[in-house]
Image (cartoon, rainbow, N blue to C red; front, top):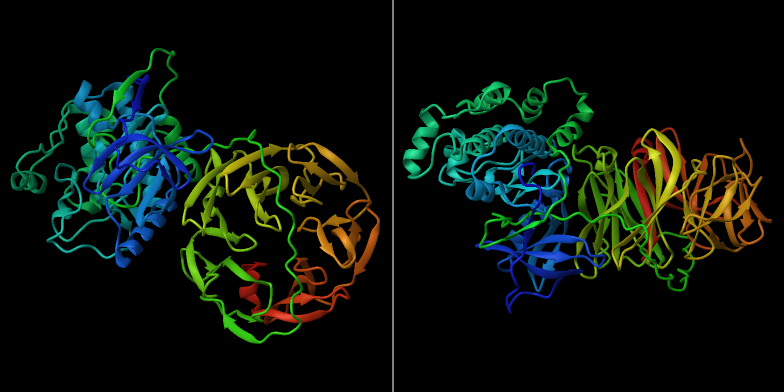
Length: 635
């Protein structure tokens, strides 16, 4: 932080029993170890550093389910003064978590090596760490073990880590015989029947006092005597003064109801009015140290478990995977045809959590593989289909998942991309290896939307739009899921149509604000332009019975769909959709997906080249079909 900006963390050498790789990451050294496992320094294929927490042993089925829940909790937390969880999986049956690497020592280590903090450095610590708690609580999570060892002093400001023993805010509490936390930083209620978010504010205040004085406000030592002081004695705040002393004192109230929330405490420390949607960003900005002159970097050899070892299974000190716009993307494999859809259905099955039913044929080469939408549940769950059983399984909350053709990868855009101020992210799950990775894609400003896989599932395309309230495109992102590489390009001719895949795997198609349809290379250069073709329909270039075409609405106000030769721009065919039918993209060479929404009932249908319904694919209440998105992909 500000007092010693040149400090960096260096790992200790690996032992013979340590793995060489975990998932797609090379293991570079040890950062720490403890009873729960080992934390390694890792490197991605592009050289970005990560923290890898490998648990000490395999888990049984119940514990594995708890582990998955903890990872899901950690993913909910927005990256404001926290260390983000990026990936998870198993190595020979042993679970691991990969997270953002924070290049800096823990507050506990700094206090041990150079003593208490003061002045602006202490204030930045207080603001940054309470900003992190506000982000954690906003996600519905309680940290439960906030202490100096779980605050890292990174070069860009403090970062809070370790949600290993966190739980959702509404989770059942442990009984009185189970203590969760570190006694000198525990609230009075934690010694009874459990605690919620107010206990985190008590622990935060105790941590700030410890940072300022070198000792927790109720001391340490013998646990029964310590607990008695926490329950009955007044805290020792040392020389804390001003608004920081006032906020800390209020957070150390014996009654949890008397403590402020993290957001209220942050507002009081900032000392000025901040719009609610900007509060976490303002806290992060205020916690960042002033730029310091560059000097020799002092190396800190991490010994034992001092730096980033976690108490539980869900999080670790974490890494940032930055976008790498100059990464080369290898040629796509040859296009593979999926074959025609059947003209009749033989089975009916429900979409869980909805009143929508699928009408399917087991011989179909394409099926409904995922869906997301406005369900009754408050956490907006998403579902992905298991390719082995055909059943839909809950994938997560506030995420929009799209399965690749063939089913190997699931790419999910988190809804939190709407709120973050520094970068967009993409969750990528490799069903072949079990690896679950979060990639940073395009920086802000801009919002990544409209995921589109190549026909062979080798690459994913995202459209970069100006923002949630402005649909103008400002660029695109191409992701190679095997290499975990990301290529971001910004363009200056955007319209509202978004980007789709062009005639081959190295070309994209889009429509500019001037109405011209353009083929664009992966470097962003315009390769060819067509004018006067109507409004481009999402879906890119497709192989149809009329040839290889791009598809538009024929003219403004028309419902007819025009098919244009992808090479020459010559019109090849016109499809007149039936009344109420909305064209939604191609499913095979002679059929397209369409929605038909009536007053009470809605349908997803298979449309033919004559514009008529060939078969109903799904149907249910019109209101529900208007709220959910269902993706159909090759099996």
